[in-house]
Length: 287
View 1 (spheres, rainbow, N blue to C red):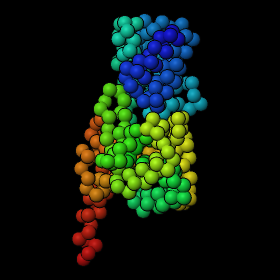
View 2 (cartoon, one colour; view 1 turned 45 degrees about the horizontal axis):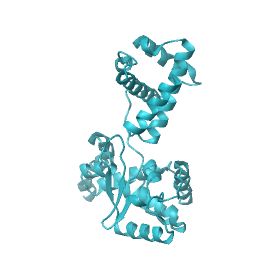
View 3 (cartoon, rainbow, N blue to C red; view 1 turned 60 degrees about the horizontal axis):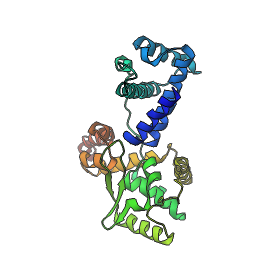
């Protein structure tokens, strides 16, 4: 079983080209599932829909409080993927998780900063060159934390100015343009630090850890007395929201963010809805 598990993780990494975050989540979920099978003496080859339902009941009783809807949905997705692999390798004859209904996730509008808050955050970070560039890349490029941490010097072009983001899962790499100010600051940073093309942009030979980025963002949010919960993804949300606020097309924002599905980007349209409600009151307020 352990060998099969390790082969699956290699399949995710080298064949599916899944991100490290995805691999970590799948590893945790599948390992927990395999422990359950071992404890119950259930063979993978005979695992069925009833067993899947029993496993979900087991999960609900395994925590101090029931797992959230999003956690359950993720675990079901992880196990569907795992059984797809088992089918591919002929270890099972069917995927019982396809017949298990995933809980419905409620979409909520992402948190974002006002333009003034974002500008204050970037200004506060100017005291440290690397911190400032990290904050700028998150906000002006809308990068995910994992994308930022994985950036190497060779992924940055200064003429024309853009960064190349590896999308994984066999998808085409994404090109995100750099504004001229950020491009100039990055170029000076690279030259001043004598960085080589195969080095990580914001580290050396060793990759920057995501938790470091979280701490950097929280540090400057506290300095600016921003009372919202600000994390790296908040800057990505703000990037998308501010572009849409300035009437950039949803399709362009989708490509900049690297969303595979347009419906994912449409969650940012909450701001435009608010503007519509405000707009209908303008004439009344002017009277």
